[in-house]
Length: 185
Ligand SMILES: Cc1cc2nc3c(=O)[nH]c(=O)nc-3n(C[C@H](O)[C@H](O)[C@H](O)COP(=O)(O)O)c2cc1C
Image (cartoon, rainbow, N blue to C red; front, side, top):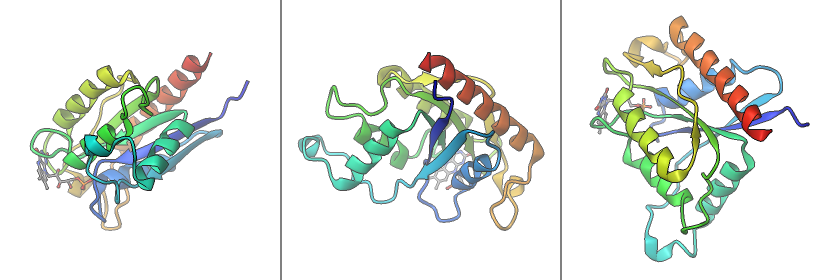
């Protein structure tokens, strides 16, 4: 049986120096053998318009293909106003339509996040998890990876330097990989 696991990483931020993208880059350095983590940049996805869902733009088609090609999804979300950023919710909506053709269905998924505040995007992560119910995704629940005070957790070159966060990301990846292999059986 194929034991390799291909993870697609999605940061919920378009910011060039995004801590959440940097967290996914850090995760790329923490993978075990046989596991890959590619990133999809949400830049260029159109705003979802249900009138046009039957004729998706090429960027949406590409996004859905990359989701389908992946064995599992890893989101890293900022927190905007106690919730996930609109850019991430829009991406989720784009890839969930048309009805009956969602790319998310049945995908193992894990969540982490970074914010400059005290709670490391915990409230945004909770809202994101709520979407998994309707999307019929299969979430890993532990550990919670909430990178608080991101300005200190990352260095001046956007490298994650907080050892606790690194250990939690490694554990989350291990759990996601184990869960993905279990679901494959
Ligand atoms: C519109 C907006 C709302 C924000 N709301 C919150 C918030 O509710 N909680 C929080 O901890 N940080 C909040 N922040 C600060 C973010 O944590 C910070 O901008 C973070 O760097 C965003 O993630 P990124 O670096 O991946 O872009 C907000 C930032 C913006 C732009």
